[in-house]
Every structure is written in C-alpha cells, then in structure tokens.
Amino acid sequence: MAKKTSVLATGGAGFIGSHVVVELVDAGYDVVIIDNFENAATDVLQRIARITGTEVPTYAADVRDRELVRHVLGRHGIDVVIHLAGKKAVGESVAEPLMYYDANIGGGIALLEAMGAEGVGKLVFSSSATVYGPGDAPMDESHPVGPSNPYGRTKLMLEEVINDAVLAGKISVALSLRYFNPVGAHRSGLIGENPRAVPNNLFPFVAQTAAGWHDRVRVFGDDYGTPDGTGVRDYIHVVDLARGHVAGVAHLLSGRMQRGHERLNLGTGRGHSVKEVLAEFSRQCGFEVPHEIVARRPGDVAACVANPQRAEHLLGWRAERSFEEMCADHWAFQRAVLRQEAEPAA
Ligand code: UFG
Image (cartoon, rainbow, N blue to C red):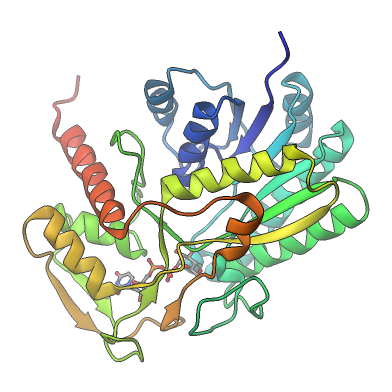
C-alpha cells in the first residue's frame, strides 16, 4: 500500500492547532504533533481521538529542540510541516520581548534548519493579520505592513526569514497564512478555546461573562468612525480557518507551486462590531450579556477586515460558516466547559 501523505503540526494541541489536526485527519492525512503544552491541555489529545477515531502520534517537546524535530521528520517521513507553535499574547510580548523573539523566531529558525537537514521542503506558517499597518478598507496582501507590538513583529520577521530560506533553497515552498480573528469551536463541543488566564480577546471574554465568570464585558470605546462606533473585526470560524490549512497543504502537494513563498489572508471579508458580537451572543444565550462602554484600549484600531480573494483564487478555499454559527459554537463550547467543571471530581 502506498504511504499516506504525512503532515507535522507544530503547536497541534493548541486552540487553532487542534482544529487543524482534526480537519487534516478527516481529509485523510497521517498527522504527527509536536507541542510543548505550555498553552494547551494534555486531554486535548483524547478529545481529538474522540472526534476523529484516530490516536495522533504526539511529541511533548519544543520546536527549538532541533535534534528531536529532525528525528520526528525522519521517523514519520513528513512531507509537509504546518508551523503553529508560538507565543501569541500581545501584552506579554511588550513586557517580555526577548522571550517572544526567542520562542517565535528562534523556534522558526530551528524548524527551518531541521527541515533543510532532513530534505523536507514544504511549509505552511501560521502568520497573522497583525503584520498589517492600520487601514479602514478590506486589506489585501499588498497592504503596507507595520505591526505595532513585538508579537506582531515576530510574525512579520519569521515571514521574512521563511522568504530568505526559500530564496536560498533551504526549503522549496511556503505559505504564510495571515489569520484575521479566529473564533468559534468544533461542533462537537470537545475542542475550543479555554484560556487559563483572564482573556484579552473579545469572544472568550464575552463567553465567560455569559457563563457568569465576569460581571460584565467592557466595550473599549464607542466613538470610532465605524457604523455603531465600536471596533470592527473580521471574525472567522476556527473550522473554516483549519480547512484553509488543509487547502494550503493540498496546494503545496499539487505541484502547482514548485518554488516560492505566498502570503495569504484567511478571513471572511466581512466585519462585525463589538455591539454586534454582544447582540448575537445575547440572542444565542437567551439573555442580555451584561456590558458597559469604557474608554478605548490603547493600540486598538477602528477596523481590521480582510480581502480574502487571493486565498480563494489560489487555494480554492473560502470561509463558509456564518457569524451566527461562530457565536453559537463558541457559546456551546463554553457551556460544555461549564458542565465539565460542574462534574464532581472522580
Ligand atoms: N474588545 C472589547 N472588550 C474586550 C475585548 C475586546 O471591547 O474585553 C474589542 C476590541 O477593542 C476590538 C475587538 O473587541 O475592537 C476585538 O478585540 P480582540 O482583542 O478580540 O482582537 P484584536 O483584533 O484586538 O486582536 C487580534 C488578535 C491579536 C492580534 C490582533 C491584530 O487577538 O493576537 O488581532 O491582528 F495581534
């Protein structure tokens, strides 16, 4: 029997990684995870197994461990790497920039070296819309870059490192996927975002407030130049985002791109305001999620929306899930977490 195509997902136990792994297994790939479990629970592996019926081989290790990464690439005959491992808290990156450059840039360089040494030439990189400078209209990939914090700069810098590695022939092809705002959860309610610290992001904070963990949501400003005055973002369902990665892997394997590095937006092309998020969440839970308007959060922009046409053109992918589904699935996952926490300890 011919060997199935093997994909390594670094950071495959995290919020986005776990959804990517599920979609890859469903699409018929052999998948291997490397994750240091710094920001992921170990029980996510059983949950992935429950959804897919497959035990995904997993290495609890850091991508900066070059020897281990080389071993995994060789032992599993990896064809494509999806690099999701990294740190992602904006505030923490301002306080601890060296830690961020070490983890995100150091991790990327170690991975690229290991890929070069093992002759693995195909890479999908988890980048972010945070690489862009401000702009009100939907942004395409030619929008000027200008990240405003160390986290964002690590994403942009690693894109540049990858570009140079491709130019020098260390690897052959790469896609940098620039995520807009991933939200929602898998329909099963088994995997989703369950931050350990108080979340900074809107969706998990709204979900936790609806669950009674916080008094109210603070709406950071209602005096922006947006239709209702609150911040507008391009929220994308995490399952759509995960399928974008599967489409990316298929594109790299198709041979249509022999050599090169493409940067692609993964978003819906539609923006929703903070007030719209609160209204839809309130509709889903059946009561109004408490909130108050407070001052703007420093560093926030009025709007950030993707022009996703290039990804659609190149990958034949587009986000399909509605804004209502994003809120419904996020809330369903939050309720599953609540039920689980209410269970008496065994
Ligand atoms: N917001 C609130 N109250 C909150 C949290 C957020 O009103 O408690 C508002 C923000 O002001 C913004 C919107 O909700 O208008 C979305 O905020 P998020 O923090 O959820 O998302 P951001 O767009 O600010 O941040 C996201 C990612 C970052 C990334 C950034 C830029 O979480 O990792 O996009 O691309 F850096």
